Length: 186
Image (tube, rainbow, N blue to C red; front, side, top):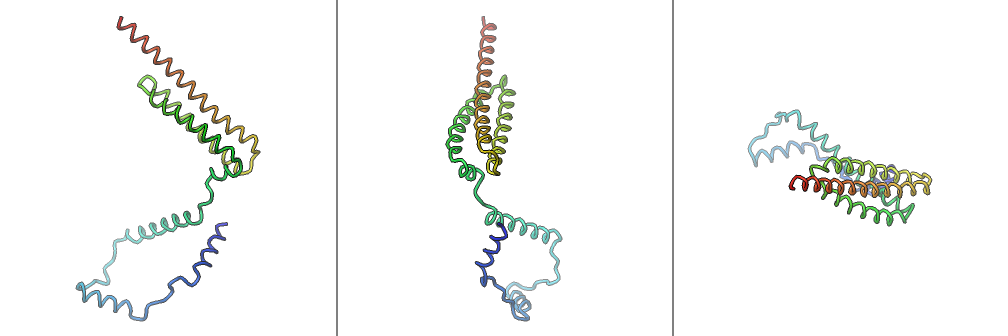
């Protein structure tokens, strides 16, 4: 596929490349004019040794980035999943917004007493999200769509259950702390 894109690019640009070479003595005439305007230029002055490798590396990076942008950008994973199973995008939007609201609530509840619990929960959510991305890729790669879609929904339900459980534990911690604080003030 990439080769086809390159072939198409070169066919499209055929005849647009500047392949003309300067006339003999061009460099000498150019340097002579430059010397007249600015003084003298030392022709034998060597550039520092780091400049050439750096410029080559920069050129390679630019070509790679442009190549990826021009030829590597196909439909995103999300677009491919939506094409295979359109209902996934609606379900994902619903679950993702619900989970995001609960994650924000969880982050607001972070105190010194609950910091470890919140951090561990966020790490678990990151793992579940990574697993979800793997399921999306499996769906795109042609796996059994019914099983994978079921696993995707289970993944969302697991995240929601985890958040509900942790928020419940944080509420218990807050209640215990307030009871503990009340017993010391009496």
